[in-house]
Amino acid sequence: MRLLFLTTGVFPGLSPWLPREVELKKIIFLSICAVMLSACAVNSYRSDSEFANQLAKEGLWQEAYYRWQKAMTPGGGSAALHNNLAVALECLGRIEEADREYQLALKLAPANSRIQSNYNLFKKNQRGDADEKK
Image (cartoon, rainbow, N blue to C red):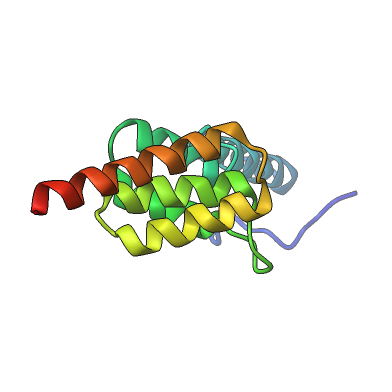
């Protein structure tokens, strides 16, 4: 099938001596290459949550919090996500919000030992901070 609507004047830089069919093939090839290269430029993280985990490991709590918030579904999130938000909020000094997130996480997964451990440590740190203020 021949497509004859392309001319060399429309796409500068294409050789004027190439037949229109070759020009079209060249344009398609270059377009495919551009799409493939742009796909390579996308980060290797599968989700905002995975990216947030990496940010947290680097101590970038505000950005991690933002990414976990972005990963939150409209109907709520998983217990693990609420736990992660709580840890981020705790590190950001937003204690009341952190407490609420821990409680949500525990409500969703009361038997989760990691969440229980994090919450117990959080409470212990809060008691320690209160004792230091006295």
